[in-house]
Length: 90
Image 1 (spheres, rainbow, N blue to C red):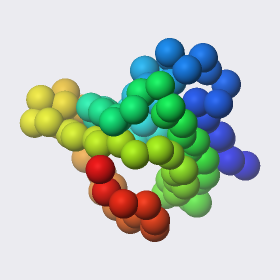
Image 2 (image 1 turned 120 degrees about the vertical axis):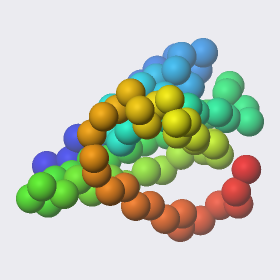
Image 3 (image 1 turned 45 degrees about the horizontal axis):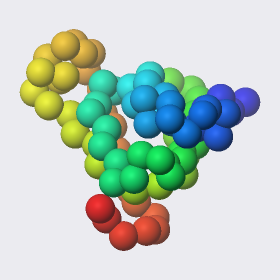
């Protein structure tokens, strides 16, 4: 069963902060920046396939960055792979 997290349930003013929390809890600690915070929307559907987490993300333009400090603070070892299916890069 999917666990779906979406900004659609949040007031516009809180969406980017909520999305940052969703991304960090779903994947790894990341910094998130958006070109238009007021119009931002995003949804993550997380599923499990054995020990593998499979996530589908639909979101407005954003830039994510994992700094050396965030890597060091995480402490866990894992592999994360992703691909962008559509939309221009920001």
